[in-house]
Length: 129
Image 1: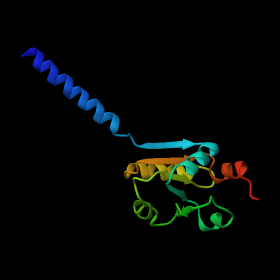
Image 2 (image 1 turned 180 degrees about the vertical axis):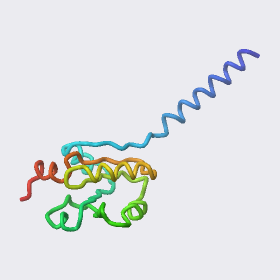
Image 3 (image 1 turned 135 degrees about the vertical axis):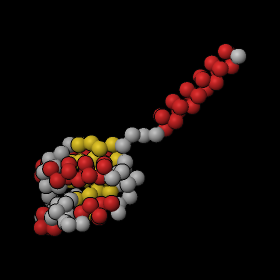
Image 4 (image 1 turned 120 degrees about the vertical axis):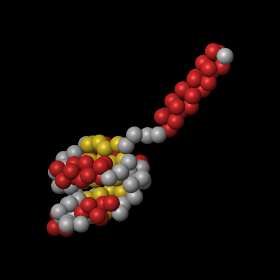
């Protein structure tokens, strides 16, 4: 009887550890421009520019979606994005995008990367041609 009980407990433990390894924890991480570039090149996701329209007119990362952080409906707009896709967020210097990352994390986005130094850091690494 004890051997059977121990066997059942071991099986339950094994099942539990397998299920834990299959569920990935949410990611909300600040990354430098080099890592940001690698991530957007290697993974399909949403590149989110949270700068104003005037800032975007001066340049933006290719294929980015612009949702102005200062817009009255910013929270409503980001909540419409796919929470299961990785999001690569940036602003001018990293402040607004850091706040956006925190908001997105709270509402259930699974994977969010914030560009440290923002578009300023990006343009130092990727100067305009």
